Image (cartoon, rainbow, N blue to C red; front, side, top):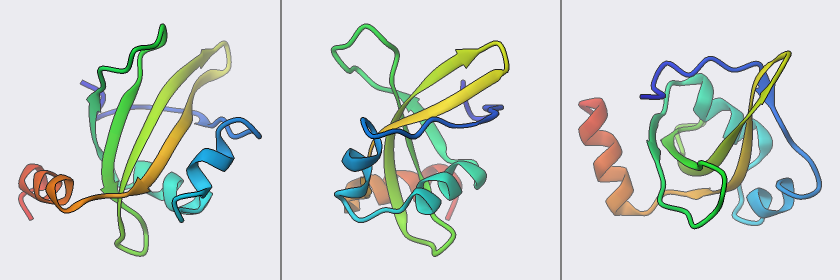
Length: 101
């Protein structure tokens, strides 16, 4: 699916950054999850745009759950994080089982 996602960069602004930051993850934390090949699954969000969930680890080995969408531009694909938070135990177990940890 999106496991081999190729993207240009991230789309951060005053609309999405505060929602991500309020749960204690920095921009660097969120971006590092994508650098480490997270597990990506589509969500069932009730919106017009397709949203995905990424589960993975930050550079500091913290588990993170990130909801995001893709912005396709002529220059390339950008990841727009919508929300991010540390993962709950159930998601950690799922992530570890998919990664063979």
